Length: 217
Image (tube, rainbow, N blue to C red; front, side, top):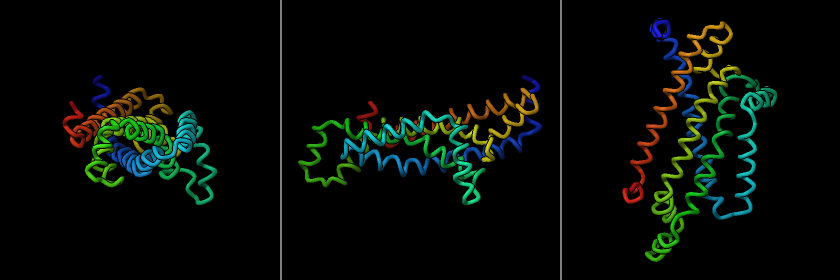
């Protein structure tokens, strides 16, 4: 434990830099994933056949090992000289995020109480107004659960992305493995774990903040 604390103290600046890189990668990936996944999940509630196809495709992507997916990205993006680095890691994280976000959004909107939806129609709300004011707020806990799952998942996968030059905490772990430095590996693992816990707590706060009180109860 003492050697771990000494290592963190001596390399604090470098660890902070890696942490910032990690947060940037995951944050951008999650924001883009939400912008894609939530609207797509909402749209799929109107097209059952397409919903099954998209969800199956997203499930298949989730079964691909991250190292294999990164390997696929290298030749594809080498065409634009982006085979390694930030871009392939970002695309991979976005792909991995789609299943929990799309599936939970799709399920949340479909599971809104029909009586609530009928009441909204009865007071003259348009389809868009019902979606924004009724369906999404009522489905917020499930939608946010998908976003929280995707975020924690991406924090872990972004660690592996360091092998293709994306930066982040994975660099620390990778260097520790190559040098047989268990202290370095442990320090990286602890930082990743803390990031995942903090991100989940922040998103839980957002979920509670934007979910109607009656639903929280």
